[in-house]
Every structure is written in structure tokens, then in C-alpha cells.
Amino acid sequence: MIRFKDVSKTYDGKEGPVKAIKDVNLTIPDGKIYGIVGYSGAGKSTLIRMINGLETPTTGSVTVNGQEISQLKGEALREARLKIGMIFQHFDLLWSRTVQENVKFPLEISKKGNKAERQQKAEELIKLVGLQGKENAYPSELSGGQKQRVGIARALANDPKILLSDEATSALDPKTTDEVLDLLVDINRRLGLTIVVITHEMHVIRKICDHVAVLDAGTIVEEGPVLDVFKHPQQAITKRFVNQETSTGSADDTQVVVKQLLESHPDGVIVKLTFHGDQAKLPIVSEMLRQFPETNMSIIEGNIHQTQEGSIGSLYIQLTVDNDNQDQIKGALDYLKTMRVETEVINREQ
Ligand SMILES: Nc1ncnc2c1ncn2[C@@H]1O[C@H](COP(=O)(O)OP(=O)(O)OP(=O)(O)O)[C@@H](O)[C@H]1O
View 1: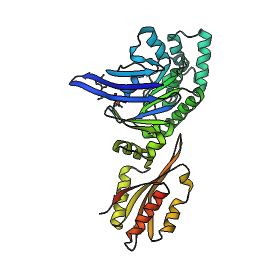
View 2: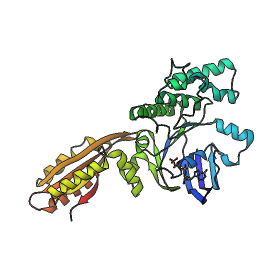
View 3: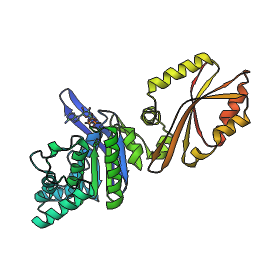
């Protein structure tokens, strides 16, 4: 378990103190994939680097695997760090060493096993991350996704209990990102280790995390199971992150369509419906139209995504009535609520 208790971190900046982390309390259970999402400068790197003691809190404590990491020194700190692997956005590989030599490097540093054992461990890890055949390649001969696989194998060399991922897919294209994310889930399931992911991309959170915390200006403003946060985002910043992922068109495209629809149907109501789990399979919308037959519906956009806890979909629709019978629209919206579909009226012409 990783526990942040009343943690604050203030840097001595050139223009005075910078409060990077403010009074954070957070518990990360063993074996989970825990995501911390925030915009640039929110304090994500500072927070994750406190887990392996690369940063120390100004006040408060960070406890990892039962030990207060900031109190450890010398050999005890080195030992604790062996149990915490880390992967980085720019891979941080040794460019003059082959894949195999990169993976063996942490074992040489920790003086674990003899030469043959280190060789065997490296081979196992290279297989685990799907890089057989590339053992003797140099990093410059690998694609971005392959480089990150080397980074992952190297981070696992000392059998850590925790893997920290610092924007590990931010430099990769979408397809390679998904392949590396699938590998992280596979490793989490097979080895049972805890993974802490920091990212500015809600896609990463949605795809692999069990739990998410939203960091804004050094403060955790919201946290919870990923599906709950996607279903009921509370804070404006969380809604922005969730929309980043649940809107297929760009936000600008959606706005243009909304404006055009409202101009042609000034009485229209634009509603975002959020479905989750089995609701996506029920004929809820057709039943709504059957019960409120004077209502017309236009679909603006829709999508469905998988999370680790089940599916979540959103549908942007416009509801209009020909005869100004607003009760029909109200009834339709009430019906959706009784079916426990999240509804959000996103634009209503006054
Ligand atoms: N060594 C330092 N000295 C002074 N200020 C720092 C230092 N490191 C970080 N900061 C400041 O602390 C705040 C949080 O930085 P941090 O790098 O943790 O954020 P982040 O969310 O990881 O951002 P990014 O995604 O851009 O890396 C920022 O205002 C940053 O300028």
C-alpha cells in the first residue's frame, strides 16, 4: 500500500516559493492500477517522485510497503527503491547498450545473482514484454513502442512490488500507446504488482486504471473508481477530462453542430446521455420515443468505450416537438432519469 498523509511540497523557485503539492491525502491499495491525471504543472511528477524518494515532502509523510520513504537513508533507501520500478516518457535507456544489456543493467547494479542467472532473468523479461529476437539490437534500432518495452523489462528486473509510470505513453502514437497499455494491464494481472500511472490523457485512465485521482494546482480535487468518475464527474476540470475521452468529434465540431441545430430548431433541447454497463444494450431511447410520440430526436454524436470495470457510452441528441408541447420533452427527460440514464442538458435556447 502507498499512503500520502497530509503531504505538501514547496520548491524554492527563482521568484520565490512554489507550492507544487498542497495537503494531499491518498491511499493506493496493493495490486491496483491507480491513475493520477492533471494538466501540465499540476504537480504529477512531484507526486509520483515522492513514492520512490526522488523528492521528499516538505511536510507530511509518504509510506510505501509499510516504510516511510522520506526517512530512509543509504542502504535502506537503496533496498526500498529496488522494490519500485519506474518507466519514463522518453524511455531513458542506455544508448550504447543492447536491449539485453539494458535489461541486465539494474541486476548488475543491485549485484543480484551470478552471470548465468542475470542472463536467464533478462531472457524471461524480454519474452514477457514481447521483444524476442531483439535481444542484441541497440535502442536506436527500435521503434518507440519497442523502446518502451525495454524500459518496462528493465523496470521489472529486480521484481518490484510497484511500477511507476511517468507519462510512459505520451511520446507514442495511438496504436502503440494502446499496445503498451495492454502490456501494462497484462503485467499487473500476471505479476500482481501495483501500478501508479501519471498522465494528462484521460484515454490512459479509461483504458487501464481501476481508480483515478484528479490533480489540479497541487490539490486532489476528485477521486474514485474510474467508472464512477466517468459516470458522475463532479468538478469542472474532471468534466473537461471526461469529455476529452467521451466525445468522438472535437469539442469544436460538437459546438458547431449544436449551434446549427438550435438555429434550425430554436425550441430544441440538446442532451448528453451517458449509458453504462448493460444499459447500452436496452432499447431505452426507442421506448422513450414510443412513450412520448410527439418528440422528434436527432442524433448529434455517439460513442462507447471500455473501461476495466465495464463499458460506458455517451449519446448527444437533440429533442424537439412540432407543436410546442414542452411537456413531451420534459416527460422524455424524466423517463430517461427513471431508467437511470445520466442526462445533462448541455444547451437550451432561452
Ligand atoms: N525543482 C523545482 N524547482 C522549482 N519549481 C519546481 C521544481 N520542480 C517542479 N517545480 C514546479 O512545481 C510545479 C509542479 O511541477 P510538476 O513537474 O510536478 O508538474 P507536472 O504536473 O508533472 O507537469 P508536467 O506534466 O508539465 O511535467 C510547477 O509549477 C513546476 O514549475
